Length: 454
Image (cartoon, rainbow, N blue to C red; front, side, top):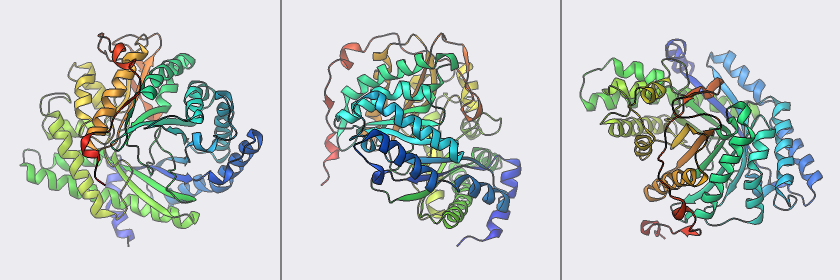
């Protein structure tokens, strides 16, 4: 049980160190909405979302008032729409109409984002999967709150390289259709390997088919809190540093547990998981990069960066699992570029490159996240970047992801403004050498040898 004294102990963290509950995400199963008629499907989906989620935002606001804990976003995740639309959606445009229905429902209940415009294609694509993937550029350009994801690989199945190739083209088309907004449509789309079913964070959230009818998942963030804590042990040995991170992560996770339990009780929905991820914001002092630099790096990207991130990620998880029996999602440390002022500073100083970021993703919670690249980057190069990151996830039995933004009309060194939690980003260089022949091979990269554990 959690008592109010534990919350009162976190007041300083909330007021001075940017502690927040990043999101309460209500997962909703749409399996009972399936119909072979598109009009009926749209009606069923709209009614289900607006009924189940009608009190979500008000509940979040009430919890904020009761405990004084900021809840930044209220979100919804849905059963992967390629499954829900398989019977009724015969064309990409049919799926677009469903995306617009979901967007209207999200606006009606006033959530910030809704995830689940997704397909799971780690071993192959159905006709519905293919139609949904082809619809993504138009769907994201015509909606405001819909987020999309595609899982193209797993340790058990390998990597669907046909999907990887197609998604390079999809990302470029999405960038083109939203070029008047600095290609922001790409910020609402992520490619996964080993995607979790219970992730509350966008753009990758979806309500897995192994989940119940509905569930509350909470995502907590507190990089400012961790930085302040480890600043107090500056110069201490690694044992002291690790204990400090672990104890701080424990305190942060307890706040998430409290909010999750309260939200679940008020909404009469089961509690799912707490996702403790040190997810930064553009605000100064709310940066994962600042933590790594406090550990002892001049800039993120310096030698030692990957080791420092591995240490941080592991002890965040260790503290989190002691604080809640149900820690899940991604949980650890995010390293987006645009959302982290310290990362931006490191890129502008020349300390941090995409290649170093890729190395860091071997030990972080997600992968290449919110990275702006030149708008004239080829589709095959984007597919190659995706393939590299998926291979890291597949071989290392971990979740990895790519959220990359080829910004039309922008070149290396330009600054792209996304606004809000998405922040701004310098456009980073990518390799000019081609991987087109590799991407064009088609087919599937088989699962690694260590996947055979049955």
